[in-house]
Each structure stands twice: as structure tokens, then as C-alpha cells.
Figure 1 (tube, rainbow, N blue to C red):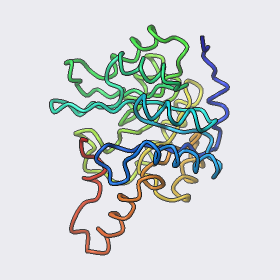
Figure 2 (figure 1 turned 90 degrees about the vertical axis):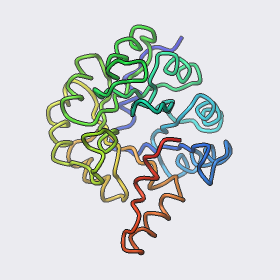
Figure 3 (figure 1 turned 45 degrees about the vertical axis):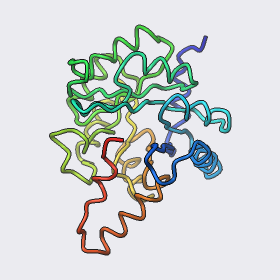
Length: 246
């Protein structure tokens, strides 16, 4: 039985965690591709991996010796909550080998009809050894997640909720506030809207324990579309493709 190891999070200090995910309708989809991305991330010096679904987590864990933040994206038409929305999903990614479980900890209502954040204490009780990464969209949700026992807080869902869906850039002032106010209560890791090394360094300077970068590194079709959208006068919003339900 694994025991909770805060030293694992300490090992992320000032480092890059690469989100290696591929969806079934991505043009680059294959189990081998997601594993190759993780191997490349380790080769490049990443301190951790973030991965989606039990199958992809198992495959990556066999190939890469890095701590893994696991989640399971499950979409329903009646909700915008899709990151590890149930206890069963959390248990599945834990059993697949993830050391850290990422949960939607926003106030959005789940497919089951409850606020997403209510799952956090349920998972903590069922899997007390697991470290919990609370994906939130604003400061207030971060406060609540810490009160409920989150080990890590990150603004992963800033730009993905109804109130923030129009946003493309990170709110660095709000993130700095999180780093300042949460530093003695939980680890604050930046995730979302980071596209360059300079973006990542700004967040470390503001107090981030580490940063997570995904699409800007591991999703070549979205990287290409981001360039094409700008070159064509921004006729299409590439973010719509990034945020679509799969």
C-alpha cells in the first residue's frame, strides 16, 4: 500500500510537468504516441507527467520513471465537469499507478447533480494515501479546495467554466494572489494558458511551486492551428478546438 508522500511534490520545485494526453479524435491518436511524448518529456528534463485515463497512465508508467498526476476526462452533454468526475474514476486512475489524483474542484454542477468540489473529501476518505491536485478556476475555489484538504491547487480550469470561457490569457495577478495566500497551506502549481518558456518563468517568479504545460508541447495539431489562425487574421479560434468535448 502506498503512503502519502509530500516529498514527491517537493521534487517538483521550480520544475516543468508535461501534460501528455491524446484523445481518440486527435489526428495523432495512438497509445504509442502518448508514451513517446512522455519519454521525450523525461529526456528533456521534465520533473513529472500529467496523463489522462487509466489506459494511458498504465502505458506511461511502464516507460517513464517520473511522478504522475492522473486524471480521467469523462464528458456528458449536461455538464462542463469532465476531469475525474466520480469516485470510481479516481479509484481507476489510482489503481493504474498515478501518485497524484487531479479533480475538478470548481462549483460547477456534475452529471450527478452536485457541485464538483464535493467529490474531494469523498476521494480523500476512500483513498487516504493519494495526493490531491485541485483543478480550480478562481481564487475562491482554491480557498475552498484547501479547506477540504487539497494538497495542490492550480488554476487549470480558468478559461473552461461558464464565467471564464472567453479568456485566453492567464490571470497572473490572481495567480500571484494564490501563491501569496496559499503558500503555507498547500502547494500552488500553475497550469493553463502557458505557451512559452517565458510564460512559465513568470509564474515561477510569482511563486509557483512548478508549472504544467500541455498543448504547447504535446499537441502538434493545436500548435499548428494556433499559428494558422493568427496568420489568417484570426478567422477561427483555435481554443474552440482545444476546449471541445471529445
